[in-house]
Amino acid sequence: MVQTNATPQDASGFDLYPERRENSKTNLQKALGFMWSNPRVEKIRCEVAVQKCMDTSPLVKTMMYALRAAGCDIDPKRHISCEPCHPDVTGGFDAEMNQIIICQNGSHSRGVIQSNLAHEMIHMFDFCRAKFDFKNAEHVACSEVRAANILHCSFMTAMLQGETSPFDFGATHKNCVRTKAVKSVMASSSLTKEQAEEAVDKVFPFCYNDLEPIGRRIRRKSEDMERSYRERYSFALS
Ligand SMILES: [Zn+2]
Image (cartoon, rainbow, N blue to C red; front, side, top):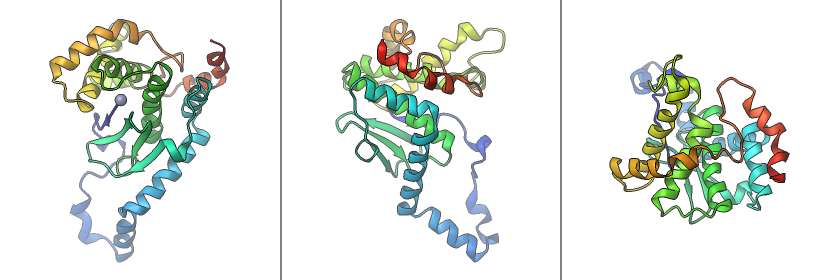
């Protein structure tokens, strides 16, 4: 349920060492820097970005449609909260409150917010539609397998994680999903690596094949998100 910074972010334009250039900044840059790191400003910026994502992202719009079609109402004001979090975490799903948490200090790009929102919406969908019990390790494992499978293990991601090569993608895509799901289960529970692996392996065959409500594995730089959005009505009929 908890989304962690599993991949290094220096490649995506993040400044890893901002303090080092502090002395060379102008007063205006320092004032702007203070403003951006102000939690209230950060919260507003996060909420604006979340709203924009809900208005424009085909993936997030498909998830919202599916949630509503399954009878799980989602009101952004009630069910999505931008909050400051530990730097290792980018988001989470609070099953008791039925609320998605987007970490305002860890969500600096539309891509990250889209990915986090869609990930947590899959947990919300499982919690509401399939009545998942997020205190049950196997239910948590199943939902994490589904989120990693549908959203996070595209060919490029699997390549970057060293889980596959262009020659054996089909066989090792499952390894990428398994690795990511085990990490997520450990991050959102007190399970050891062995216990998390056991829970993931037990549910894997069934949950890996359950692609509802997106219906496909989203590939990077593809038309998959738009395609899922166009086909969203088929979900309501199934
Ligand atoms: Zn998760």
